[in-house]
Length: 188
Image (cartoon, rainbow, N blue to C red; front, side):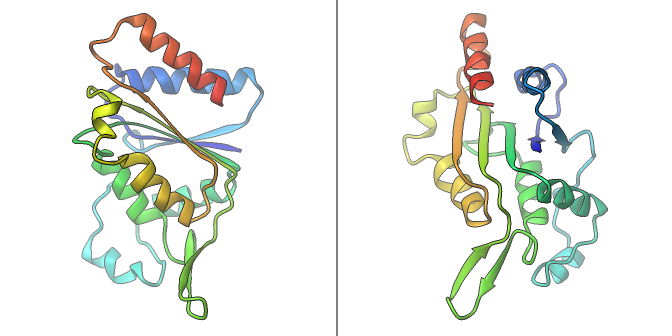
């Protein structure tokens, strides 16, 4: 099962166009998918003090967390779609990772080995982003997606990561954006 995690609030965005094309492509390839649309779900990314008190135990209050965890448990592939804002992911997506990738679900700390061990087993991870900034500017001081996000996702068992970014999204020609869509569809 492919799980798509989508984090963009505007229906008219290029991210939404990407999402629509990915879901259409998955249907054409007869691949089953499920969607986590953080804005549509009204997901609250803020980790409250009550939730933080449960964090080390791997417990949660928000029922969406349990629903998202169930979807991820049944996934062999994850596609994450979001815009790069301020050289990183939107707050709603960061909150998703904070609240969903919990101890006992996504990872556990092995005292004997003195290291974090993954509990998820997801074979393919594709991160599809858009940005106004050129990709080379985003990666100039290190790659925020590969260095930060993939490092964390790999630690919890999301493997074989690939990042695809459509830069200059508002200023490039339509042909450029359509070519990007084609490259994404080849990847899924």
